[in-house]
Figure 1: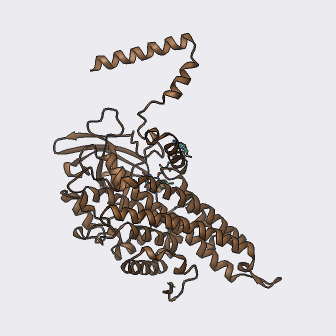
Figure 2: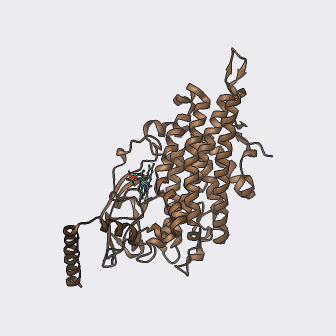
Figure 3: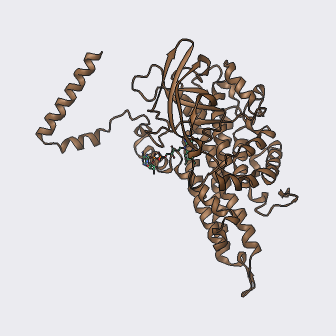
Length: 468
Ligand SMILES: Cc1cc2nc3c(=O)[nH]c(=O)nc-3n(C[C@H](O)[C@H](O)[C@H](O)COP(=O)(O)OP(=O)(O)OC[C@H]3O[C@@H](n4cnc5c(N)ncnc54)[C@H](O)[C@@H]3O)c2cc1C
């Protein structure tokens, strides 16, 4: 077994024996080892000031670009490394574990925006030009979806619209949260489609550059993920050429189901798995080095502390193996993450078949990490509570996983409802009527209330018929 190194010394945390290395190719293991070095030299030290002063981790993103990682899963023909979902999972885990959780989130949103572009890169030179700039210009992207009116239902962009104009589109969007908002070089943003008629599944996707966005980066002041700068942005009456629509009009739902959600939730899961492992590593260093003179034992000699570690390691590893298994399946159905398979067939959506597995990966990882980080802080006692040990930062950063959309409340309800009532019952776009609930409520109306309802519905019908 290869020795994991950290600044020329064997790593202070868990060795490779605790990592599911069997998922990785030899080339991917080399990428991992180089990335651990980069975390030690640059990303982890920078994380301290990013957290303390809410600094956007551009320096860490530059470090990732120096290893070509900003184009990790971009096909070689567009200047990328051509890596697969398993590699994306490993890289996210590695950045969050050994480096910086805010950087992992910024990088997640970058790769997410890139994924949406890759899905429709075929035949679009503007997108291809953007893809080629990633590493050379440290050209950072992000995904701007969450809407001020619909909260964590980020796929429901009510405060947005797009219109057809001569030679292109006029785009309007308000986004309540955008990681890297004000610091990114390009934004992938979703709006209702130009021919929108009230059907919120009719969405379109746009590539927007930094100078077309109004952002308020200084407003980001949060419990954790303090470097990621997830502030609001506005795109107001921005006119863009035709090729800045990503895919055809109305491609938004396909983009979500294939380009964004399956891979994005996998990346979030990987980042939170990495964060959990990072907490275990930091705590291991502390408890193996601290001795209580009265009993002559180290903290790690107490059985209660050993129980904490056994529990935390097994919980995190279950989540990691789950996440890698879903990533491997996505590789299997996409010819090893070959984005060119989408070029001739807009309806080819192999990842979307496994979207529900990504939901579960995100849920499990972001639920597990918070408990694991909390237990590791307990294992370190009062020293863990102090900033110097870094575990308190991990606890704060870990909290973001559960609340990021789709939130864990939404995801567990999706899965339970789907299992009990069928997939249609999820009603993503708020379109199907719950007749049981409606009939039950109608039963409660007295005659006057029924008449008032009939009058209101008749007036609405008459208005709709007159408009036709
Ligand atoms: C660190 C961080 C980075 C982010 N980065 C981005 C980004 O880059 N791009 C982006 O688009 N967004 C981003 N977001 C936004 C995120 O995805 C959510 O949209 C946001 O956290 C929602 O916050 P809210 O206050 O609107 O919550 P709300 O949606 O108002 O939720 C409030 C509560 O209601 C619950 N709830 C909501 N709907 C249901 C339901 N149907 N059933 C049961 N419970 C429900 C929620 O689970 C939650 O407990 C980021 C958020 C954070 C914290």
